[in-house]
Image 1 (cartoon, rainbow, N blue to C red):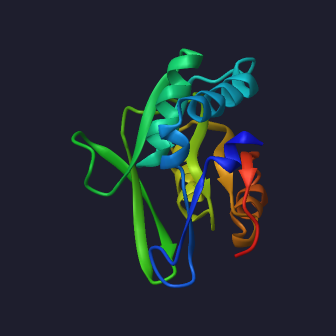
Image 2 (image 1 turned 90 degrees about the vertical axis):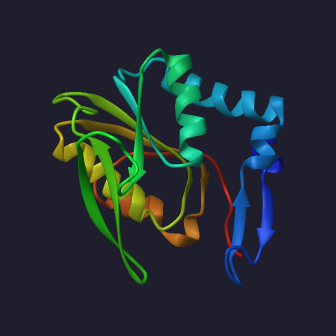
Length: 175
């Protein structure tokens, strides 16, 4: 698939042993970026979606372009303290400590059908927390869409274990 070949791997970033999958090389390539968004548009153009919720920061790039093409609303999912108006949040566990994702209290309405978008699914902690936040606000998570799946890290299985559908344009196994 042409998308995977346009993603750069940066060894030992952000720490030794990690193979970082960098989508900036995909985004700077006009053909690669167009193919990425078009493949997602093709998948979701027939689906009933009210809003796209995208996780900061690279998810914003994919999610906002997709929301524009589908003609639906865009909702930014941010880390704690980054949104200016009243928020609701969900705390989740990290390997060492906790983190929190937040949405504005008026971002999701009861009954909204929401597509969750991010650049990559690794362990799935942030995506799972975001799904819980969306459903706690009365929204329904239609699917979780990613450019990249790292299946060895278990995020897809984690989300599917909670009843969520997961889609990714490409996978990087191992290393």
